[in-house]
Image (cartoon, rainbow, N blue to C red):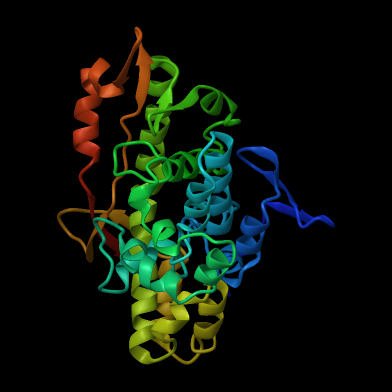
Length: 343
């Protein structure tokens, strides 16, 4: 009874264990490093093929489903494209392995997460990875597992908001393409370069254009009203299913389809569960209504302040445009919603 999951990436292994990938952001790419290929083929990475990057957005934006697997490969490809070390490429490839089913919806289900920070996946990352087959693969190729799992070693792959990093660049461009906000990513990629472990745009114009695109994505998708409704209703559905014993917490670390199918068998027997299912599938109208609401909820808000080359100097967009500084300050705060469901 869940949503249909379209697939985008096309994978074709050849006799030398190389992978030719047709990616929506970077085009046709070949991955030939045996260690990367082995990690890609591992159960932990393959699981991400059935985990939605956005959570459970299909009821609000049909045809936009894309996976954590696609994004994870994208981060690795982006890092390789701009000359990052093989260690940093590995870190980019595995950075989302600890995501649960429905991605950041888990922050509205388990106490290890946070509505305002969406940090569940980061909080459990180290312990989760250590229980997978990935450390064994890394040791097989003589990589230091502890070094790879420490993201502070890889500033191109991950940095705190509002700084740019490969993770942020990939998911923003990928989201923009999925939701038809841009026709292609080439303009932004051609105007990016790396200097002193920082992502830098070649000029202010391209940096500002990217920053404004990211702002639009945040307002419409990352922290928009539909995301608030999705997080609230999926969180309700999963919490209720957990409390009733229809699923276990362990089930949440399988994938979207398996969790949905396990709960599906109880829908006809549990009237409240059926009602929550309708809510989560956008069958019940909902508004943001401060004076009369059912649920108060927060969404993590994301904004970027890119570096760019301007008059021979490397500067932040906010150092050139004072208005952008105010936008960054405002959008760095979690978005608060007051949801009223109209039955």
